[in-house]
Length: 472
Image (cartoon, rainbow, N blue to C red; front, side):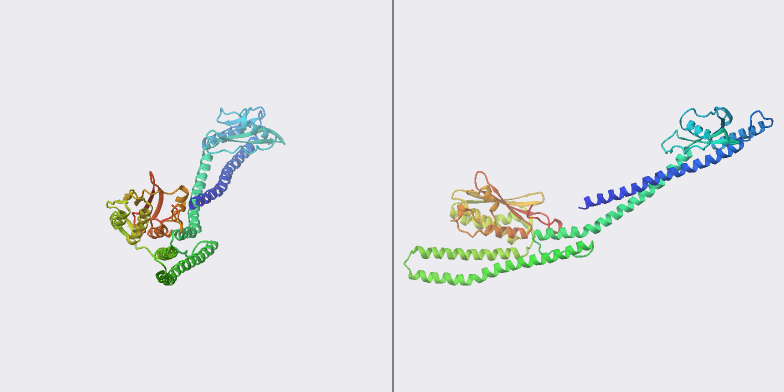
């Protein structure tokens, strides 16, 4: 979320800084040029004041013309600015350098024409730092007896002006960059301040979703709305944990409390059977149903304990453990005429050995139940990447695609296997035992027929791996 919010804040702040910076840069350039234009207008007015006393054909005026020419020449030598006084017919009264003439077109001609009308020229077009050939032309009229008799024209280079504008822009850019860095730092702090409670809330939610119901959010920091959300989340988690704990306690207590009455009932059934003829089908059926009910109660109690107990996770040789379970179940497999084989090289994983043993017992028992005589059940341990696996395959009838999505649900059994002994809780207990240790169990078809059960366990210690998500 921060990768989406932080760029948005940075783009917005950059837009604000640019929106302020561009007008400031334009204003700076205009101010620098206006200062130059005002200075040139003052110079032109001074030259115009000198030129209005120069009259052609009048004795003694040549000295004034010479003084004006000397002033213009010194002005050009010192500042490098072309300056001249021209009559209406573009005839020069005096100019420096001597070869300079009034421009015949463009900005200079427009300024000259405006001055002939008795007013100073308009402000020239803005000069930008990248305009290498830019110049500023200013014209001012020479008025004598109320008539415009000549025009003073100055044509200034813009190198220094462009340099000052560029320096001002660089200062603005430096200020904008510093402001942008401060804005980025503020955006990072703001984003962290806003999203820190969200990240904590997300982590706590993930922990609860993966079975750690004691995870809570510390309602500190962040906006008030998120602090209220954290408190509400903790209240919800407390209620959920309390409800689940009540459910587990109810299942465990109910299973435990029903065992004594059920044991007494089974005893009375046996006493009743003594009064009936040998081989009575009804009493045999009642005895079978009673034993099945006792098995269901035992499995419910095991499931409640499996969901409630904490795992003792340690580095375990799952290959050796799988070989032990195969050896323990081989006598029953031989009795049923099923080949039970195991391939258990030295493969390690982090798991609860007792819980893993119980899970393997449930899976192997389930495989032996549905594998017909003459077929094989194979247990194979292997390692790859960050996980180790134990794969149990059987040669039974297998399951359909729809049944594969239901396998592992509590009390679920395939309609084709209702006559097979069991309560439908074995694989649910297996999943709870594996999940407590960070493992998982998956089911798939086995070719040419049968079921493949894959138990996956992590190879990294709990502190060095992310929280396990069973939805993965």
